[in-house]
Image 1 (tube, rainbow, N blue to C red):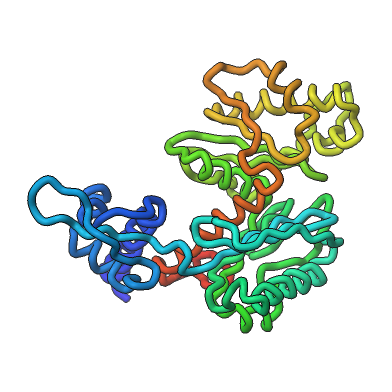
Image 2: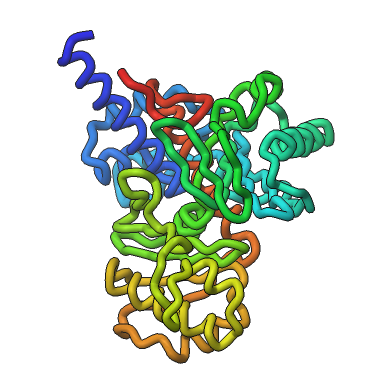
Length: 356
């Protein structure tokens, strides 16, 4: 492939993603509106959307117009495909199946010892097959599944370093699900993401934010932070951004990690350590919003009352509460689907980009 043809192909894929993503976010629009808003030619818009008509996209009526020919309204059919999101904790997992716009079809909290990834993957597969056999989903309609788990996700080596409270060892994208899973769900892309990162993505999307920065803190058995900077998830160069549980802030002369110190402290000390860490994060990233999720109800009012920050920084609880992380996983699955149909070089099995 020549440089020129490779560049042209990359541009076409980029344009496809911009158009399909805009349709997904809008829900309904016209070809002309897309052309104007994305600064793309009308033939380019028509070329991209044509293969998805009467399936993922449909025409319903005409747009309002003052004079001239009225443009056809293009609707994004969110029910045409299904996505899944899973949150992993030590003693349970939450599994959700939804339409592409995260409208739930089924949500279930499953008590389970999640410390053994091989047993966990079999349980997840069994649940999905139950939904399939119960006619809640068609196996070929499941397009993407995002697993949100505490720890570091290495997208280069495809490894999952799920630490406290799971302590997974030698776990990889490639061996989490067996071959039978992909035979049963042949179109399903599997993505792994840090749970606090998934939380941040979900909260950002739920609030319909744009060009803002947001920090989301998740308090489960472990503690983590997800950082959204101007609509992009910030992971750092090695996937470890937001691993605040491993910080050693030195509270009361102790050199324990934030996570360890928090776990055994009484309520008043927990408030103080959260205030300290929040203040540092706010000064470091200067976000417009900070969102707290997980086991924070007992601390929230005291934290809000005592946190001394600029008035422009809003401190809020999660919109989705107990389903905040799994909702973020669904949001990542939806974006993965749009990437998958836009980019030829997107790995359909594991959700990352392969080398050209």
